[in-house]
Length: 485
Image (tube, rainbow, N blue to C red):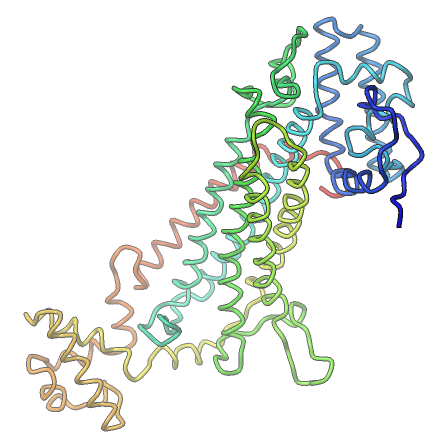
């Protein structure tokens, strides 16, 4: 089959070419089917650029105003869904420039003065990512708040703690929930740190080496809310570490959410029966009428794979690229958009799951008060009486083996039976092996004792309140008015 070619169109870069672009290359090159999402950010950057060009004399005042107003009209068409995207114009930048020229005439061709698509797309993605960081940050705060609210609501309810998915030691349910709150708090810090590193303006770097025209990039930076300029024009157009950092943040966050989902799935199983998700966040079976499936949690766990894959995709794209810009970098946007979309969908779902989660406290208490979970407390009891820990550990293990043989729980052994295995054991051990005593004993910093968990909850709550107040000061600052926002 012979290759199909499109009717020749005048490309904005086509002056040195004689023939038309091959149909297959046209399809391969077109990115407007996904990078149209940068349109409002592209317009924002172009308006700031046009105002600057007018101020430095590269455009007349009339030309600058005409471009800015023309772009405003295009913005309204995009917001109302009345803009026609042309795949033949390749990308969002050329679509907007061609539409502007059609709207206001030859003056539209002056917009691209002193810039390249290379620094233009670098600015667009920076603006998009800056807004996305703000939006995802708000969603993440909501999930953290739900975890803290649920931890406060369950108070001092016990549950079994696990290692290797085997009963280990009793802990507080709130302690378990606060562990995820801590993970997400670090995720929030990573996101906030990325927001600080996004505070630079790449426009003015040109294709790779800057421009010989008398522009004022500081003016554009101020207009767009950046505090500094990119230090190196090659890095500005070729660097993608800010995107990589967002994708890495997303991969780590989704890994944490996947672990949370796994716990919820286990807890809601009939074997565990620790918790139940609300009906509105569960699904049924097409064949088995009795089923209540935790599909939301399963999909949250499953979507972690695609977000991790997005990071690997962009790392692989960037790893072998020579400086500066290469067309491979067109592949940076779909992983970025997909990760952003996934996070913005998953975080509110996770928040609702945590808020609606109902616990079976009696089942949790019975599981926490296992027959052999006091073994560590028995060893600690012996250590306090001068027995070296390794010997105490061994003696407690012998006691467990003896109890298993007698089909008894550790606490059901008599003092004489315990002394056969642990000669220095005292009667007070029976008070120490109760569930409340075992919980209260873990009062070290960060431990599961009620006093320690109360402190953790208070500290986490104060930190969250401060973060919410801080983000409210600038919320909406970077987000354009757009149906997708």
